[in-house]
Amino acid sequence: MKVGIEEIEVKEDKTIKELMDKLQLSSVPILLEVNGRIFYPDEIKDRRLRKGDKVVFIPLIAGG
Image (spheres, rainbow, N blue to C red):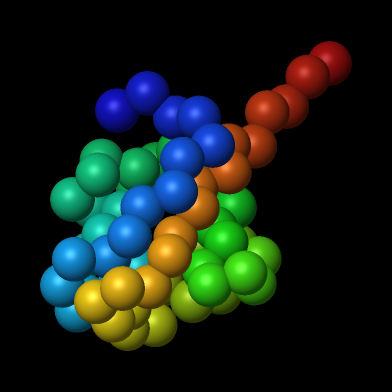
């Protein structure tokens, strides 16, 4: 999956990890905004999302 800043409305209850696995984002360096709060995925991977939650994927870009 191409990663850009994208908001997703959760359609069914699942964990952050389940959603990231489904979207093939488990190995992509990102931050998550969940209902307006920013998290690193590892901080909340077991958090349950509920139908209607808003999740934004924010890519982390490293440079040198």
